[in-house]
Length: 108
Figure 1: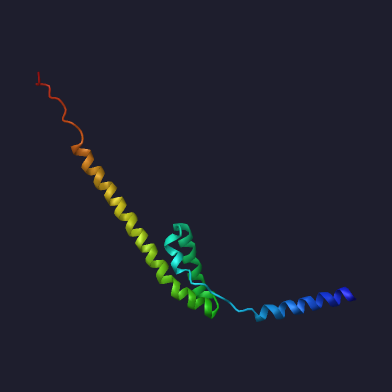
Figure 2: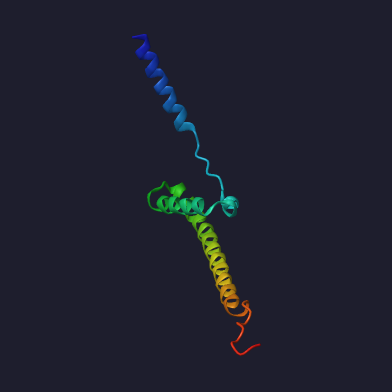
């Protein structure tokens, strides 16, 4: 019986201690530029999920974080598009002007 009573006491103490803990949400917006694309996409997906199914505090945090995440995703997409356009532009310029003219059959 002593084992059962000790177990009940531990469980009782554990739940009391857990209910006294406060939820701390850290501002991670400063770390967003350092995140990889995959990490940023996962963060955006999690924030959107919390907007609909999170606690009030999680919803508030997600509401504050999503505009920052979306802005970073848009900035990265624009950078990638500019880089793609630059590569295409180089290819087009290089395709016509870099090759020397072919010798004609009448030369010599």
